Length: 332
Image: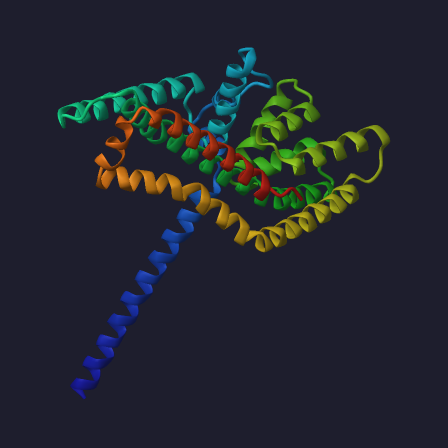
């Protein structure tokens, strides 16, 4: 009998501990999900900031509608600013360019110093090779990382927008006006779309036109789905009609288009993977060989013909990467 009581006590302790741990784990997961669901705009508002200050913070990293500087350099800085804003990197494009240039010069100087310390003649070919390696590490690699981060958040926007449009349509069916439906999206949708619609709502509150604010949002992220949404709102405001029904048809078109796009990506996955391999393999080969045996390239760089040959190879590589990117960039 005492043994049975002891077993029952141990079982009760085990069940109690298991239940406590289970409840604590569920509460932790639920709390983390709730924190993730809150977008940045709501987080700033919860800190006690007013809507005007929050709008200024959110708008501070957004690029303008046109480049600030004329010419190709201004266009490059504007595109860099838009990519950095899409990647949620709060660094001005001028500062980012200066940082990349400074890092390139520093790394170039360090590598040349080690080459000179190893008693290797520093010829024009060696300088060209070392500069190419420094540019690849300090300029090309960070740009690829930023571009990848931007594309990831842009893809997240594309996945969020059909759900947000569904919520918007249901709000209209429930009798809410357009402004109240957009305000509902700012409270129910996570980042990045939640903060972006919050910025649109704040701009409309302070006197901006709704269609212009939404079109600026579509231009910042280069999303055709939002452009079609803006066109639908514009046509309905001019001609009248059931906006909820129009948006339901638009939602069906967007989802069918997304399904077709995923099918195209699946069918073209082999070609895209081949493009990635052809793009990355020469760079990885150069970097690995230079890291393992630097003299493999430095000795060849002593020849005067290396300058012309290496420059031609780099030009052909850039041209090949451009052609491959255009081939695998399939529009749906």
